[in-house]
Image (cartoon, rainbow, N blue to C red; front, side):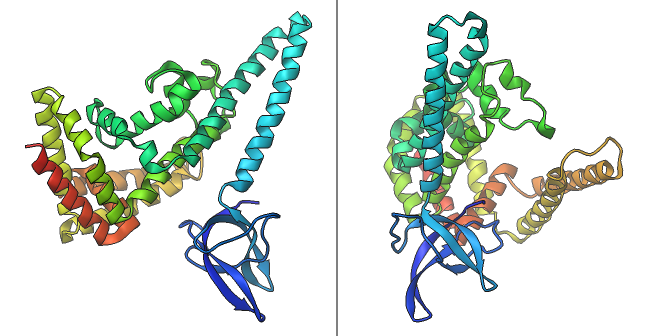
Length: 364
């Protein structure tokens, strides 16, 4: 059964006994932000207030309860370790067969071993990311490389982080390498078709979900750390010198271009709460969500009623997008401001405005 994320909030009396209580923290879960009594914990586990946990939502006398609670990741780590153990045994057996001279099987066995090596490297990379603190993940060097990256911004940050924590440990190549780039951006193939992009490059066909877990672990770690205004400010001040030094190493023309982009981002954040921006932002996000919800329903036959409705929703979404473009200095930064608002409200957005203003003043 699917496990749900949450954290321990303390103990409440239940039938005369003080019982642990957890709060659901997954926004998409129907029980989001609700407190649940803990009905059972994993053997050998002791809970504590504030601990991040995951659990199965069960039912007791018509009320939802947390079942099989454990510190977050313990169950998944156990599955991964067991899977790695079995894959290691299989690889060892394959090696023995090859050593015995079973030539006829060398092709498929060789592929099995190669797949295991890649899979094992991916699981090791995921475990490393999950155990890594945010400020260890995003060092001065990481910040400097992001500033110097040809795309900079959010895309540049993702590229630098994925290269350091996925591409080089798994494939020994940069982010733009043949196997790494295709592994990342073809991790989901539509309609359950065989992943030909993976097959052509010797990437295990079943590794897409694991790759997405690595990507998600890094992004969630960043969001969790930076959604607190005080932590965001402290991190900015700690890495500011490295960012400025890297910026000053750029050619003058590139510095001018980056300064212009930064001004657009700053003004988009400053104007996010303007009534006209808010109105069109709400219209766009509603239209986008309606279109994306229909896309998620799966493939529709060409020109079928489902396909026509999807096309109509797409046209509406594009119209609302153009309307928002007309009211904001930077469309994508407005969407980013919206995500920050969902994470930390006006206080977090205000901190972003303050830091963007400081960055602009610092590079002049």
